Length: 200
Image (cartoon, rainbow, N blue to C red):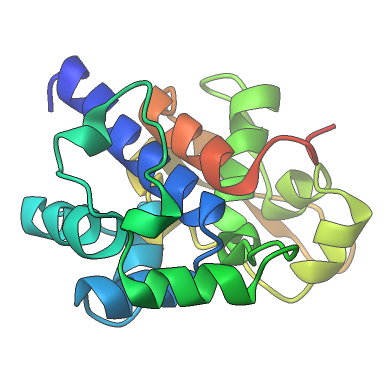
């Protein structure tokens, strides 16, 4: 993928999330209104799958009454609520004064991406416990029993198993290596979804 297309792709995702949060919509509601498969929108935003052109068009038209082209506008202004479909108006009005849930804040790998980007250089070795130590106490409790599955993540091609182990609190832990720099679009996507206010 060429650099410009990466920037445009990330811009589209950023705009989609900007609109969703602005109108207080849940991710599953986007799936339903736009006629997408179950959890499709959340997988797209978390980077687990790419958005197809017809999906972008469907979200733009059916949810926000916008063309796909407008979703690529760097200065996108949310449309007027009165111009949106009735189902979107009702959802928005029922949640006035409330903040929509940010479901993807519980996607551990997105936090790991930002930790790697801030604290580790290419060639650095680390254990999963070391990565988790950079999380806030609240997030450490949230992810206490959740393992980091690098090989199944969107950064799998950038993380290598060193075939070494380091002494841990209860047992030796695998050592991983940051094999190459993480792409900027992946970093920006993680920031869009989980923010950086928790990052020490």
